[in-house]
Image (cartoon, rainbow, N blue to C red; front, top):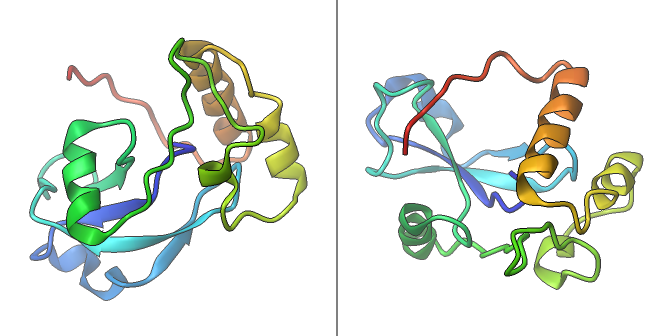
Length: 135
């Protein structure tokens, strides 16, 4: 989530037509990212919206290339979060209490970091549900 650079919807999904071209803010770092239209999205799966993380997913990488999205890598070679002094992650962010809390995850292994991130999002009242999904 911390490396997301867009939210994608299918171009023919009428539910989201009015949102294409607008932006949303990522919780925990307050990054403003665009809502884009791309055929990659399956409008019948889940909400029909897909977060795009070009630096961490092969499919998202291709979407990112098509839309000129930044690649924000937030993991090191050992699978730990690398946030401090990470120019790509820091680009466009402003200091905030939420961002300070997020920096506390620097160096944390990805599965432990995911658990902490889910807990924070749940505490903020931003989590509806988690559904298992086999990749």
